[in-house]
Image (cartoon, rainbow, N blue to C red; front, side, top):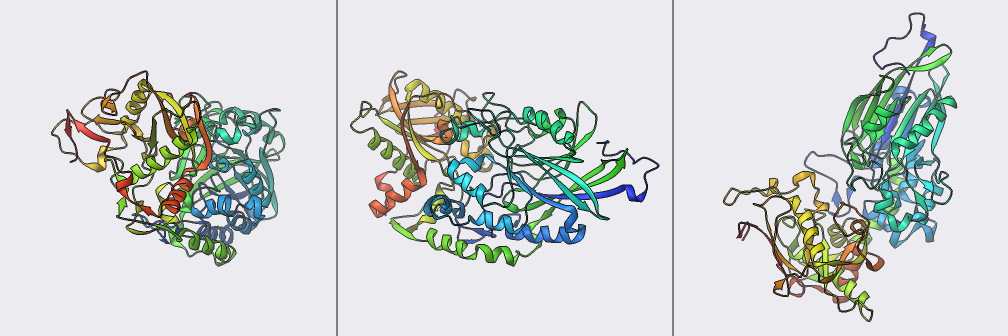
Length: 573
């Protein structure tokens, strides 16, 4: 590959040039239609983005019509089968592993003629049986060069493809696509993959496979990488780098372009210089859920009898500029409606409205509800065993700022919107000292604020780059978070049953599989003794509670056990 800015050789004639276009999606997370199942309405946000494969399909058709379908490809960078009520339904309520029904994402992607898709980390959320069933329904391969068999170290999925593309003038070009997933799967879905699969580093596996692809004749080498560009990891240094796409471009010679996924960011076009060759590598990332389609254009010139990429560029197309493809919509219409009907089924009643809007900075009844259900489930699981007398604490993060348990009828949709991830319940043993350190780590989420200074909720949280889902609040103990103090010194007045917490006291702590496996890099919890591994989704526990009780009443669980303070003065009354 020549530098992107290089001019073709002077002797190159018109017949020695051609072009290839590769389109890319990523982080679709189960969106086919432009629909928000949690709000029971068309999807909308402040930027008026639209989502879903149906709209992406229209964009794809327009590019194929413009460039010539024979000289285009369509690939994806992962996180396909988790993220909406649609995907939950066909993993849990009517699982494709039992019914054999074609997954709506498979039906839609097959109709759009995808050439390949990389594995995302969320592909593993529902277990390998569901993933393999989905894979079997696809007309194209799932790529995962760094998902290897734990026993043999051999590839557990297809590492790459090389497709011969017939370009204009019937000039064949071989386009190779290498798929790489996120090493974090080993932590985030440990219960599904431990002892079965291993996940070597993204850069290391590319160093192995890119030369092999070149040796097999790939004229254009693309990487579909479920890995962001920031060079950081949410799990520390325990595993290979999480967001490694920049390092991949810099370190591995021979890559022409990288379709980036995982980070849910928008990168129209970015170039990274390879340190070994000095050549520029194109990076692009389409915004998640099908809001954008990446379009990569490659110009090629024959050099000594071989095609060489002489220029590369990319742009993003916006899904809100087109209507949905009626072919895709028709394919999933019945399944889409079935899920809408299901999630709008009332399962109980609430005595009052319980919004989550302020949950990230104030103790709210709706978060107490989740913690109460989790703690109750762990307590029942410990009953009759050697740890039955342990006090049970519980942890929950404010996943959604818009969720609400409404007054009156409560539907499955309301509860699923409250707990948006398919996390399962764990109970682990922690000491009082470890609980304190855990809460200190969580409290880094808040911006430091001097006593008496104005407080703006919009800028109070997400300090140190901490997302909402990596801020945990705990029930079962009482504590203040003094945000006038520096990180690491904020938890004050930590007490249990009215007395200061004994650093040596043992507690059972209810949490989810993501946290227990190390997600968020919280201290102690991933190495804590496991007391309960229930394998039940927490949102199903919420649904079961409402079905059993019939009524959701804050009087049964609300407990203002934590608050933000500055020098002892509450930030919010």
